[in-house]
Figure 1 (tube, helix red, strand yellow):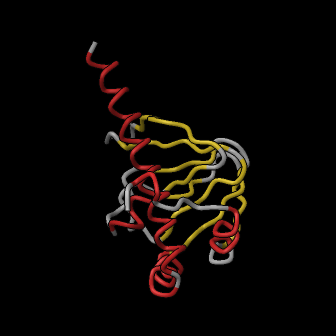
Figure 2: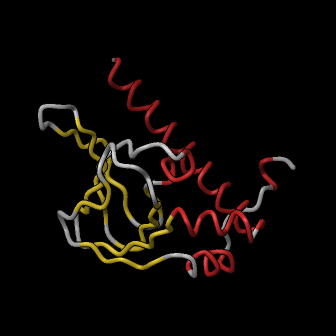
Length: 142
């Protein structure tokens, strides 16, 4: 199936996905995930904004990006099983939907259409982030 025909998450699938998630509210300054810790979930940002920070060592963190509503965090670690690649901190009070690793595995085993749509969505998010990183590297090289 050509990439352009691969289904993305529609309203019906988003509702089904939400049934597998836990709604959480975080306050500004609250850490959602820590770099280096095992990845056991991903989060969909419903409201608010989070900062993506990379530990440079010696207690020095660099904020590499800020993400707002209608995107995700933690998808890379959830899919690859690798430790978190950055620390995620709420920049403002935020509402997130958390998809645990167990719920993700349940979806993969029991709902092929939703699993495919979620995986396609994650690929698109990761492609956008890779493109963003490439542009930033290009700017830094100037």
